[in-house]
Image (cartoon, rainbow, N blue to C red; front, side, top):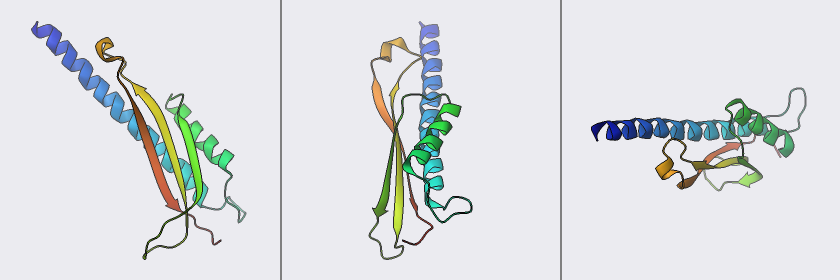
Length: 124
């Protein structure tokens, strides 16, 4: 009985680590896409297209072996603050997450999201 509880605890710790890893990869992928979207392309004054941003985010996700994520790029986003004015770009990456290590909890599913909002570096 103690061995069963110990093995379940070990699997729960592994699953929690995997959960946090996937969440961090989604957040980093969104940041990578937002970073590409805010600065002009090299040698030009134009910003990257939505297709280029999505391709960069998908490339980042592919390097972490994450498949099936939904990528959303919204631009321009106007944020009403008194400190910072300008156009922003929002990149969101979402993925349905399923528990893999414990078959008892395999029906549990949660949608993980990574979001990034950055101010465009070019003037409108």
